[in-house]
Amino acid sequence: MQRTGNIAVRGSAVFNAFDLNIGGSKEVSKRHFSNSQKHPNFARKKNTMILRKVFLFVGFVGLLAACKNDPKSDDMTQFGEDKEFQAIHGLPDSINFKPQGRMTQFNAPGTQNGQAYIVRTQQPSNKYLLVFHEWWGLNQYIQREADRLFNELKDVNVVAIDLYDGKRAKTAEEATQYMSAVNDSRANALIGGILNMAGPDAKIATVGWCFGGGWSLKGAILGADRVKGAVMYYGMPVQNAGELAPLQAEVLGIFAKKDQWITPEVVDKFEDLAKATGKTLQVQEFDADHAFANPSQPSFDKTEAAKANELALNFLKEKLQ
Image 1 (cartoon, rainbow, N blue to C red):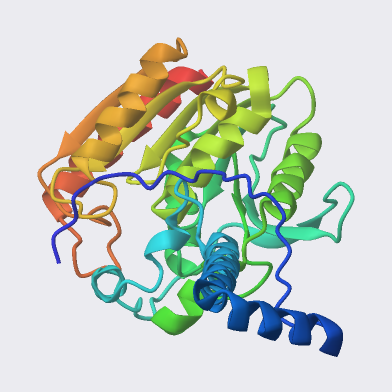
Image 2: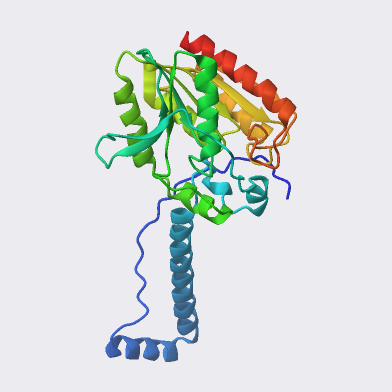
């Protein structure tokens, strides 16, 4: 199934209340019957008016249900039930992995504690990299990526936030369920908790893939002037100028030319939005498919992933120096 690349637009509609009076008293019914005898067209007109109201009511209820279930156009949940999207995200195999960091609980403002995989520097450092997992959750592959970035950045604390609150998807259906269940207020509280932990004088960058790519951008927005750079690998960007306006970090967008979901058209619109809001956005598109930088996925492209990772690493080093 070929994607057009058009971004869904969530609109709003204002409905006037209307009175659906199908029933009535016996006296009213008799009056209507009497009128229909005197005027042959009266009953036909009355029935037509009632049917129109019924159709309007049914359509209104259907539209409300559609609006309730319609996923946001600026996140990845809209693709979760797409079979091709599921197929390109193969179930990760188990790996022989010895973590350098550990799972740690932290305070999340106004809600229950969160947890993150944290790799800390031996010497105190005010530099932090926030890592956002893709749709399988904070699994061993993401932890291994956190370790890789920690080793390459040297003096930076690396924090991989668990947006699924301990859940690890074992099937595509579970991944869709967990991804769709992520609540913005809860995710924002988790990010806020890590920002609090880092402190007001911290120098921060963010990175994420797919579902986490979008959250890398949102995390950078939340971090305001403390966040110096954000890397988003083939994630869905925000599409509203008001949402992007608070961003103060520079953004590196790594995208795939063959991506059927985060299409080149989506990327073009993001570039236009960044330009219109005065943001610094560097876009690099690779001749690959969605999830090409994830070694656990069928679409993994070793050559293109190496190029993208080097570009991302240099960007992060520059912003966190």
